[in-house]
Length: 516
Ligand SMILES: Cc1cc2nc3c(=O)[nH]c(=O)nc-3n(C[C@H](O)[C@H](O)[C@H](O)COP(=O)(O)OP(=O)(O)OC[C@H]3O[C@@H](n4cnc5c(N)ncnc54)[C@H](O)[C@@H]3O)c2cc1C
Image (cartoon, rainbow, N blue to C red; front, side, top):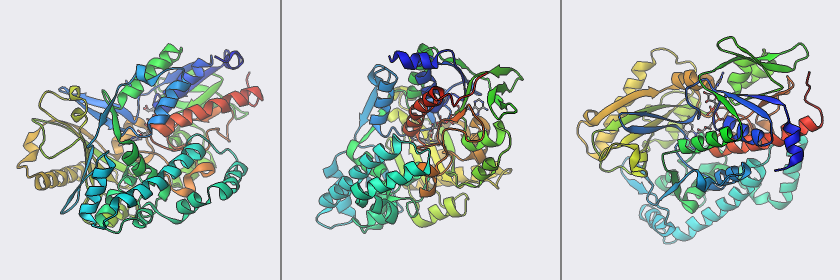
């Protein structure tokens, strides 16, 4: 380890608010550099939006489900001086996805030839394989570009971003052009004309909470990633990543205080953070405060009022979900590990979610069955279904929500009965855990307005335009996690944590941080 950087951390006391993926990764890295780190987590478990709920032998993902961008996970563990293989076992699964349309079904496969045959079946064109290869090759170039310029780089000044634009105008003009001029949908539409094929190759926009009609074609990297790399799943679920990060953090010396919420970040008269006040009134003094809690919430609930706090509330946030957790009395025939049900009016689905910010009349349904990949996650011969229904932000729909959730549940069950030909599906649900709703996302994890991924990923919220990790109003305050640069999703949040460490070190070296 770099001795100089160890000394730099020295006795500096860091308080991290929240033990999500961002807080744990950052804590582990700072402790490795000899900072004295304490994480305060309001809940009884770490993980936040990447955690599990379980009951009666059934285990469900609460939040993150898909393990995407393998390289970032592995690189994060390497940066922490560990090998991911020593902590997490990955399970490969080939026929991972199936997409149910109104009158058809699309089978995803890791095998590109089979996938091309499936496309050819729906859109007979004679050269589906060639088109698919061209589409994937284009996305692969975009992925390389995004990994280098977005995931692993943050933009603190407008000049850094302008320089990025100028440099890439010369070297990556085609990618920039595609990103700016094409939405995900219009980009795929250059290769395939059939509506169902276009939908199958753009529905991944739901993962990022963007509309394929307005979201940049940059997000097609999700599709290309699934096709090129296939889907893997960590044994014991996504929470095994959190368990591993927590173990490494503790090994490195991080103190984790659970069931200890932070009520306020303490700021002195010179606008410098001096510590935090916990929910139980305890005052904790420290040199540096990093908030891993949702950024809009942090500005509006933990820090003194500022103009920027109000500005953040006006930014577009990623919509929400109603998530059901159903333990079934048997294995449900016709379902695979991932199942997506797309309504007949695809465009209206996104209008309802993004423009009207409401519960779609005919919602899309994502069903994840973790035990199909890791049998230990449900009792023998039974299924644990995590059923996710994306809905609008719902900011104005507090109260009376139970009835709406019940209505959505009935719609989901009716659709499953119809599509799978199962009678009385409801009677097969033997364990029914309290569903997640915008209210519960807010109450459990302090997600602002119950939105699940924080600030949206529209082009106006990326790069320099995405909130910074340094707090510009108060010194010694930093942010890590989904709403800061580079963006939301477990791998990006890990990138956010790793990119913050050199900033703190640089500020320390330049004595930008002010100490008593
Ligand atoms: C339904 C859903 C599906 C998703 N699917 C995927 C997916 O398939 N793949 C993927 O990669 N990502 C997915 N994501 C996104 C991913 O889970 C998140 O972007 C990521 O986990 C966020 O991590 P974070 O550390 O930024 O924040 P969080 O996970 O929100 O962590 C913040 C922590 O701070 C704690 N906290 C908040 N306020 C306080 C306070 N005042 N005091 C103390 N502690 C506090 C919270 O309890 C929480 O533990 C999904 C998210 C959701 C909700």
